[in-house]
Image (cartoon, rainbow, N blue to C red; front, side, top):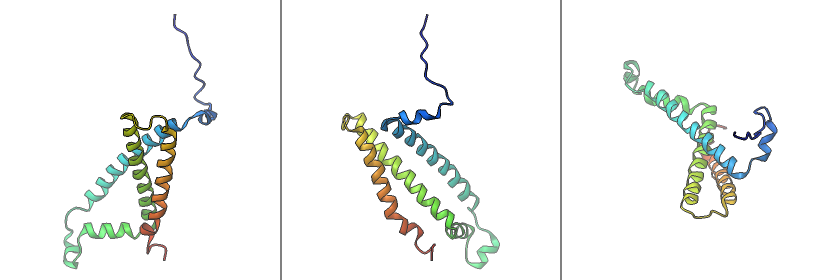
Length: 139
């Protein structure tokens, strides 16, 4: 007869305090991966609707693709979403490199520190790039 182990209830929301850095790294990596997949499909859907030439805009000298992109870039929310996309992509890349190093046996003792370093480096890159993404939009 097998023993059962009480893993707690699903409704016990206080269990997140027990998570270690490794669990948060796993959660963030999976979340950012799904966000990137969702962005990929959204990106393809939006840009595929603007492929081709609209005869009316072709006579005016601009095609549908260019007008779609310039229309999206003029929206402030799109610029903020681009900053979020950068944060997601940078963290996913840095955490992936961290995981590759751990799989190769490099830095096994300092996995927590390397996770925190990837978070700090992501934050520094995103903060440094905000003026580039929002330049001209807040004026």
